[in-house]
Length: 220
Image 1 (cartoon, rainbow, N blue to C red):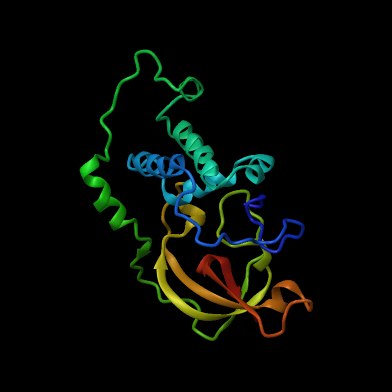
Image 2 (image 1 turned 90 degrees about the vertical axis):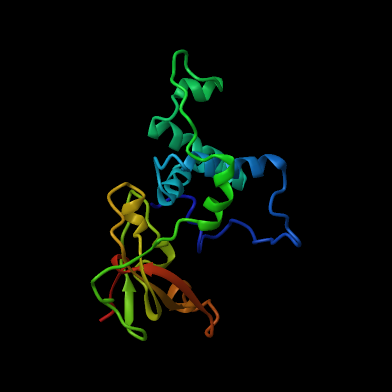
């Protein structure tokens, strides 16, 4: 979706300042936030793409103000409410509603390590051959969806070249809205920096963007 989360190419946001020797977590509550997301996700009421879309829908002013794991908290609260696992009153009070049933958690302590190690691979088998070949010129479609998409704004309408094919993967644009996995071939597309940013960009620079077949069309 076109939102404040899609910052690529935007001006005025300040420099990127990597933190030397950055720890995995800056505070203990951040580790807890990760654990809560994993535990709640085990209910299988949503998927990773729906989780991303929940964070994308954070109001813009809040999105820019919140830290990384604060965004995870805001997104999780949205998912819990939309899935019906908790009610708005329960979120506000921090307590279960009177008379609500207590369910057994699907992720027990002994299953955490295997679940985290196994992950949730997105690669799928499809019968269709890739529409595009390595070295072929393609153009990212000019779209402005109101829902989730993995096609960044800065690449839309721009031409590039297929650099490699990653195989078929779950299509996030449909999966985020529970419209099916719709697996498609995934490509690494090489865009010249000047094709994206204009003549002010360095002539020898390029940006590689992983895009699904549904994001692309022949460049002509």
